[in-house]
Length: 387
Image 1 (cartoon, rainbow, N blue to C red):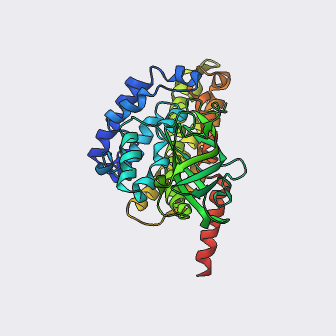
Image 2: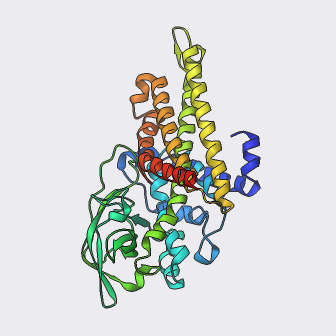
Image 3: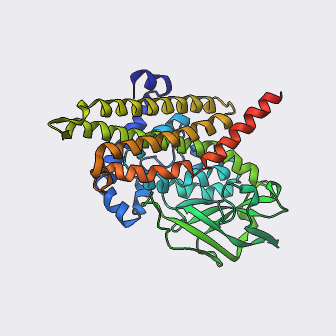
């Protein structure tokens, strides 16, 4: 990162946060990350350790058990965690970032005490469940129902591709409490152990191996009305509030993954020899590295600009959609190019670029597909044109 970029967006407090997270990654994650990837999981104690260092609480108010921090504090944390080389670990350790914000913004004091503070303390794992087998990007079309019965909702349905789904102690679930469409959706917190609630075994995925991803099932699952977040049938708006920050997080992870792949390719090109000289001496390799660095820099600079506007309270729905679509595409190209530079070694698990290539593929899907991002962009552009 250039000094100019650093000073424009990051200050001394951000630097301290980076140093804390970097040490955490070096001491607590890197010695074990390869084994955790192969095992498909990492230990729960890592949540507690991250909480002790204040990492889990970044971006959350102290009244909820957080440690505060602005948008760029969160970016610093995500970039340093991604330095572990395991996108799955980053996703699993940070699944609360999509599960807790609706509770923080719209929950009661009692709900914050029960569902936010213990997660930020590393005592509970939180997940968000929106996607369904027949309703992925079409949030308004979800079918999981919650029928009011006295002081409880009876929930029936299922969810798919839920990060931290297997071992989450609580799940913020989007359910249908009203009629069809966006106007009939509510959010409920379902706790593990609730009768009628179950999960599948971990799904076997192309990438993000270290994060457990599961299907969730609700069979006449009774959830207290006291676990509803905000008013009934207001859940769609709460979810839309969530998407801007979630997509920014995906952008940051995409850019950091691409940067890591570039760093690995630069190192390898300098060390690896072919035909009696380093790979970096060949023009085709040098130009490929130049293209990779250019794209990574452009994507990261745009992401920071969007983040600065979000921090200033400026609507960036269209711009963050642009940033996500672009960053995901850059990540795919750069990780692909890194594997190509490594040649056969890039296809072997022993080398980090193999994992980065696999992990990067999800970034154009999760948090809203690139196709959905383009629809959002197009709608905003056409709406502006009609003014």
